[in-house]
Length: 130
Image 1 (tube, helix red, strand yellow):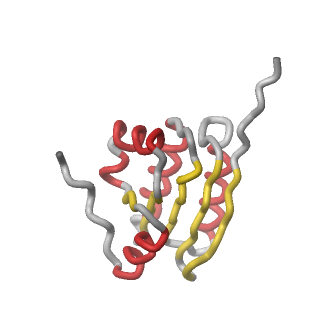
Image 2: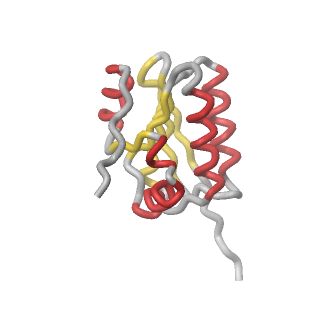
Image 3: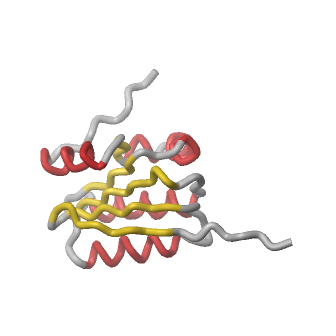
C-alpha cells in the first residue's frame, strides 16, 4: 500500500517593499517545514521585515512548523518587524494556542487585517481571555 505525501506549496507575493505574503498549502510538518524555513530566510535576506503567513489551506501543523514561525518572530522583532499568521485552520489554531505561540505571534483573520497592522505600525491585540 502506497501512502501519498501531501507536498507543501508556498506562493510568494510582495504586497509592500518590506512585507512578504507567503500563502502556504499542505501539511506543515517535519517533512515539509524546511521548505518554509528556506523561503523565510530568503525573504529576510532580501530585507523583508513583515511576514504574512496565510495558513488557511494548512490542514495540519506540527511543532516543526510552529518552531519556524516562532524563530522568524524572534528574528524580525529585533529589526523591528512582525509575523502575522493569517486565518489558521482549527488544527493549526489549536497547536498555536496550546503552545502559547498565539499569545506572542499575531493571529489575524485576513491579509487586509495583517496589512493594516503593518501600515499602522502596531501589532494586533492578543485575543481576549475568556
